[in-house]
Amino acid sequence: MPAPLLHIETSPLLPDVADAVVIGGGIVGVFTAYYLARRGLKVALIEKGRIGAEQSNRNWGWCRQQNRDARELPISTKSLALWEDFGKDSGEDTGFRRCGLLYLSNDDAELAGWARWGDFARGVGVTTHMLDGTKASEFGVATGRQWKGGVFSPTDGTADPSRAAPVVARAILALGGSVHQMCAARGLEVEGGHVSGVVTEAGTIRTRTVVLAGGAWASSFCRQLGIRFPQAAIRSSILSIGPGAEGLPAALHTAAVSATRRSDGGYTLAISGRARVDPTLQQLRFARHFVPMFIKRRRSLAPGGFEGIKGGHETLSRWRLDRPTPMERNRILDPRPDRQQIDLTLERARALLPALAQMPVTAAWAGYIDSTPDGVPAIGEIPTLPGLILAAGFSGHGFGIGPGAGHLVADLVTGAEPIVDPKPYYPDRLNGSVWGKVADF
Image (cartoon, rainbow, N blue to C red):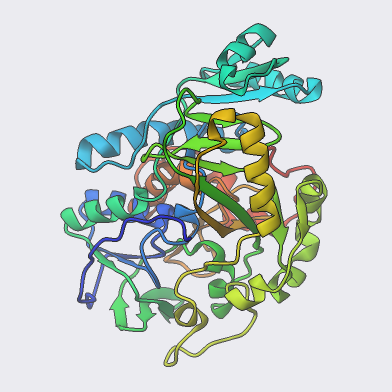
């Protein structure tokens, strides 16, 4: 029962030359290509599998400012407006709605943390409402429980992971860009120390600008170029249930379980932060960089198995450009879901929301969430290889901030005024220690 995904038809012929080539057809890659195409660039988007088929259709669909790390809040706020603008400008429907996000808790420490964040957020113009016990219980009436408090963020919302990336890809095509599925990028050509082309399984595209939005594959790709990018992925498992439940919040978070209404009226269910760590050689290579992250998340993470090795996305091997690569051997990362976590999620969801008790499970899946050591994305040009811009390591936040990230990359490519300050995202920050800098999320 895979995660649902809208399939689209894309460009059959690879161009010989492009102003920019975007590697990776997830939400960040498609929005990057979209904004480049809107600025008149001849852009080619290449994807080894299907558009949006990895983590971009395996997430909750939340587009939020609430509880964002201060470094990500500006790009989160910009992204909400861009989600709306995209629908108006393109005529495509990503399923984005400002439905508001509801957080409920009976834990005093958790509520105090949300209150502190709310004080900070209101100081930078973000609308967020702390709820006392009475209001929280009213907002959470579908649970049939009393709550000590909560938060409601009315300007936040959700989009539909099953269709968002594919419809943005359709908009690229409408603007004259090209989109290529089942076409893996094998490596780059370099002349005079500058990017000069992208070698794909279908041929070479000459270009001076490449954006690597390769998700969980980004570090192994960088390794082929002699670029060190510390990255690790964890395996998260979630499920969906069919439509029919009435009177539930559109998007609800509690410590036990979270629920998000899908476009078909069903719900996606997950336990926030809960994941498996599947050991790989890449993880061992960068282990010391991730010690602060794992210490902070230790209560949510559990040892995994061999899914990461089987996936091939964290390989340390080198590959040749004239032979099939690991990306061609595994077009779509589709790891086995953690059955124990799926069962626990469903049990908790039905206990929290009685209206879900009779709703059937329609799908269960897992996905790899790629992270940087500090939990903040890496966005920016690689100093040692001019012409290569990295946009990866979104640490589970990429879907919601995808439009802002894509816009920022397009700004960097074209020399426009950046939509947000790019400095917090520069990849070279990861050459230093992240002790005390791990994002709160």
